[in-house]
Amino acid sequence: MRVLILGGDGYLGWPTAMSLAAQGHEVHVVDNYMRRNIAQKTQSEALIPLPNLQDRANIFHSLSNKKIGVTIGDIANYRILSKIFVAFQPEVVIHYAEQPSAPYSMMGFDEASETLNNNLNATMNCIWAVMEHAPDCHIVKLGTMGEYGTPNIDIEEGWLEIEHKGRKGKFLYPRAAGSLYHTTKVLDTDLLWFYVRTYGLRVTDLMQGPVYGLETDESEQDARLLPNFHYDDIFGTAVNRFLVQAVAGVPLTVYGKGGQVRGYLNLRDTLQCVELAMNSPAAKGELRILNQFTETFSINKLADTIQRVGNGMGLEVQIKSIPNPRKEAEDHYYNPSHSGLMELGLEPHYMTDDVVATMLEQVISYKDNIDVSKIMPRVGWK
Image (cartoon, rainbow, N blue to C red; front, side):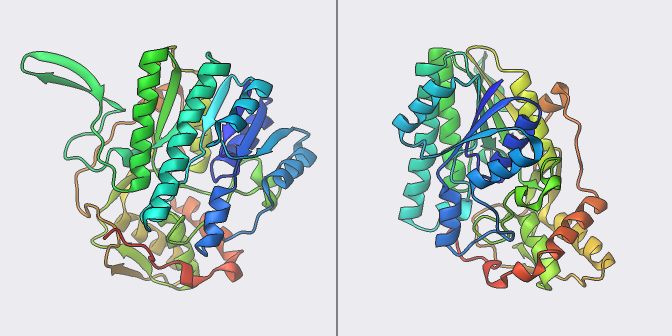
């Protein structure tokens, strides 16, 4: 298929591009380097210096003889995206092109406005480009489990059937996002649902949990093809932060009580999920929502696992609770459904001790690049 990837320089976008190109799909990627620029502006550079997007594509081509087309441009500018659609005529568009940091979106007005304008305009422009130039194109959109928040009832896959005063209806599951970034994802879902039911678009919205891991089949060939690995408080996930802290000899910083539970998945499983969604497209006029994760555990359990594995490798890992810079429940009920992707054929990779050890070994190999001043929280919600 002809696959257009928006946000192709990102942690997920680049591995997705390589994986699909390796399988013979015609792949074109677009990126405006927003994440790279924000990382430089906030002194939140990735652990591993990586080539720019065009150089990455050239390296991949030299190793695989597979091409990935590249456009450096801002899809929040509709004219740029429109030209790409006219020239490429995608059959699938995979939309990763959003400012992905919750802390950055909470820094102040300018950062909040930048996040809102980029994320909503990128989604709106994607919708309109499909309607105007490729009406049968399947939109695969990356959402987030963070849209749901932590309600005191089970989380369904996007939809909830309600009986009220003797009548029944099916509605989008209530959202309660915990940051401005996550709120833009809620607004994305509402935009998509409006255009699906009004114009008959076909959309799969993947509600993804935090992703971990570095290696894919393609990146194993050359370290220059690795995805970006952020460990700072702006772009780094708790997994990445803990891994780097363990290697650097900094106590693992658990925010508050540490009872926050989330749904996690391996990077390799993200690639599986996107491919499964792409190969089994939503029907015309359908907004299909799939919860994309493989296992749930608390921050405390994550810290305990990394401590146990790290100690077994001689790292002497300690854990320290610090005041929570975020406004979130630290002890809550969490039981989300996630059967849809399993039914499509997902074969999960779980966070075993061997997986954690492999990630720690990878971080150790870049130990000299660690800047411990980037680890502690610099942004508070209040």
